[in-house]
Length: 277
Image (cartoon, rainbow, N blue to C red):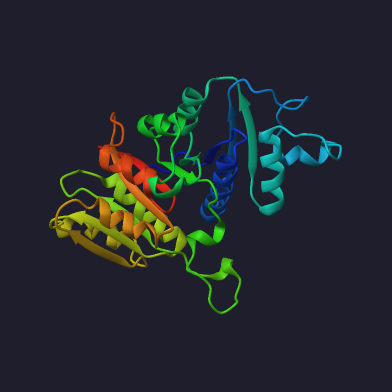
């Protein structure tokens, strides 16, 4: 995967899901030692004085009880939660989808929020999130409302801080018939950054040459393969209940297929949609 773009970018619209996505993006930026970019797109008015870089926050006097614009509030909250993180807040009047697609070009990963669960039907994904995930040139991670930091780690049973627990596995859904180096590389890299195992779920037999170079490139990553006879969707959904991230692909120039859209809506963890050839 390309390393010439070096930010984690998250779309902020003031919803609870976008703020939870911003918190996830901040943790990802910290893991990867990258700047975090917050982007508010559209025509919703911001605070008088405009949008600021978080480095200049100490120069801003915000009276107690004053309603803050969503972007400013997110930047301030994240700066307190992650004081060592380089946070840049930006606002544009460009409509959300084109603004986010443009931002994705300059990002290592683009992060968006999805609305919370609605029972057995899963969690709905808005048209903006689906539209961006279907067309972005970079990986797009969709984070459901209510996602917590401890949700991506092994449950703690001995009373130790959740932040010290190991990360849950990264799960990769892989089509053996596709040429998907960008997809595989993203999954291996993400697992390595977290020191997490990588579980690869695929149909039929996977040629040993598919994963061999990635195993050599990431020798510290434990890889487990799960071969499924038939539709891998149910196995991926089951695996997502015990995963920190589910990684699925889509062909460049095309949106996610029916199976990927179902996983996006029903997975029990954040979902990364990665474009590949």
